[in-house]
Image 1 (cartoon, rainbow, N blue to C red):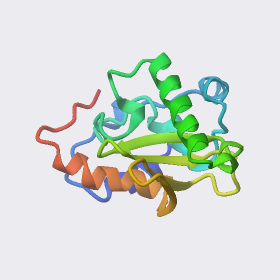
Image 2 (image 1 turned 180 degrees about the horizontal axis):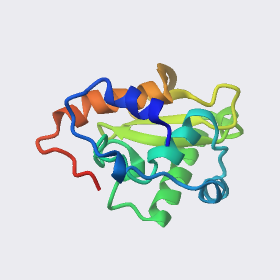
Image 3 (image 1 turned 90 degrees about the vertical axis):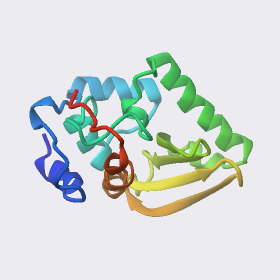
Image 4 (image 1 turned 30 degrees about the horizontal axis):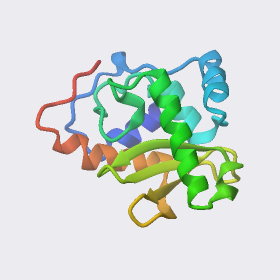
Length: 165
C-alpha cells in the first residue's frame, strides 16, 4: 500500500473518516490482466493507485465521478465504455492519441471525460475531452492531483459519508 499516496489524497479533507483496513488494490498479476484487457500500460501513478486503492478506497471516494468505483458497471460495460471513448477520439480525428493508449478514468457533468495516455512519455498527465466542444486539452493535474481534487470537490460534498467498503 502506498501510504504517501493515501496521505496526499486525505490531506485535502483530513476530517474525512477513512479506514485503511478496507483499502484494497490489485495484485501484480491482476494489473497484467488489466493491461491486456484494456490494451493499456499501467505504470507510475496509475500503478500506485491501482495497487493501493484500485478496488476499494476505504472511504476516500464514492462511485462518482471515478469509473473505478461505479457499482453498476460490469467488466463488459467498462470495456465497451473504454472502446466507445476511443472511437470518439477517432471521430474527432485525434488518431495520434490512440497510439498512446488512452485510459478514461472519470466522467464529470455527463460530457467531460478525463483520461491518461498510458503509453506516452507523460503517462501521469490528465487530459480532458469536452464532448460538447469536441476539444481535448491537457489539464494542470497529474493523476494524483486529480484524485485529490475528486476528494475535495466530490467526497467533501456528499450528503452521506461514503461507506468504507
